[in-house]
Length: 297
Image (tube, rainbow, N blue to C red; front, side):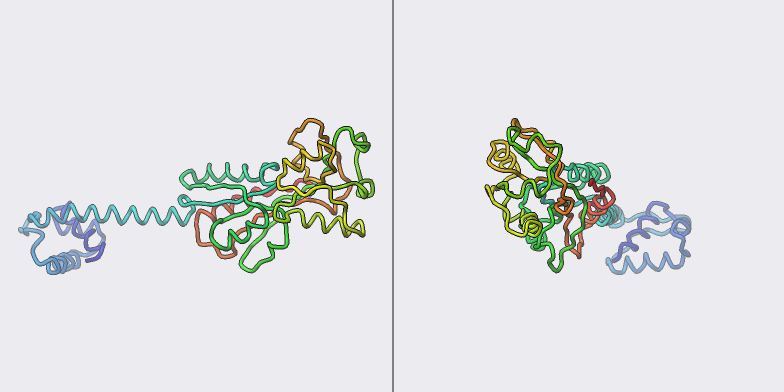
């Protein structure tokens, strides 16, 4: 028994006539009659009482009419559900984020756009340290990551795309001798102790770039595990922090932000995902995230 047999049966049951049912199905009456006869043989008994003018359902036919309609409805529901999943209209997208994904507004813009386009899909979002996102995506714990660039992104099976680039600012206590300057250079801060965000070595690229520019390792004042801790220590005069420009939206008493004339120390934001992705919802989110790329330099 195939779904087409049930469609043919229902057409005859609803029309009460083989000729009209055949016309509705766009097949010839003998072919329809043959299909119904085959169905009756498979089920082991008549489904219709045939007369010269019309056909009437038997008791077994009335039972099949209910079950056939239910089966076809379920098949249609299954078809629509699968198609919605393929298009990304349903399903789940698990996102890990760090750093400028939030402060730049990139993550929230992408989430809003996705929610507007796919209101029935589920978004699961959590903060995940940059160096942990790649492994989480490859192991299937996450689908998408927003992270600064780092060495772990150059991994087979992982796709990384730049979705934001920003200059760095110097976060500095307002009573620091350099705080009244209009801008700072690397040379001006070369001998100053630097506060690094060191959650799973996330500031490794910055440390490496500073070492290359200075010709020596920078002086480390503190290694701390959160952005807020970095800014708090800087406001307390415990050192300087070189932070991405979007962080200036965070206002902390006693802290000022000064431009840093060092484009080679720019901060970026990467969108990372699996190179081979099967989820329609994840594909749909990535498509929106790529459309909404806007660099601020």
